[in-house]
Amino acid sequence: MISSLLGFAFCVVLCLILLALSMIISKGVLSDREKGSSYECGFEPMGPTRVPFSLRFFLVAVIFLVFDLEVVLLFPCVLLSGNVWLLSLMLWLFLFLIGLGLGYEWSEGSLDWKE
Image (spheres, rainbow, N blue to C red):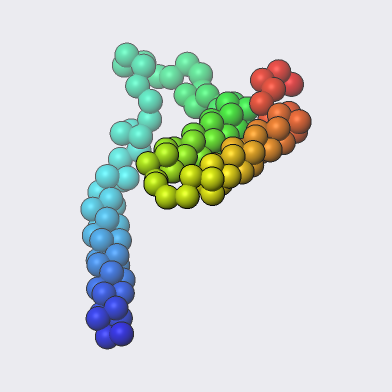
């Protein structure tokens, strides 16, 4: 109990030290406004430098990451040995749940690129 409490206290103190150190170091970096502006061959920017990000693209990227993570979770199950029927049932149930999630996203229209 004492060792876990000491470990937790050490982590908290380390986080506070690193946070304070980053705040001290970053004050000099953020003071120069010209360093944060865009550069176009020595001329002033002719238009807005920030381009709006497509929300559709972001949504498709997040859905891809979620389903990609779920597929990666399937790979270790292939290496397990033991009750093959139970493992097969779990894998099919997992794939069914992934299919349900994909069907829901499709029916909701999140995968449609055109509005």
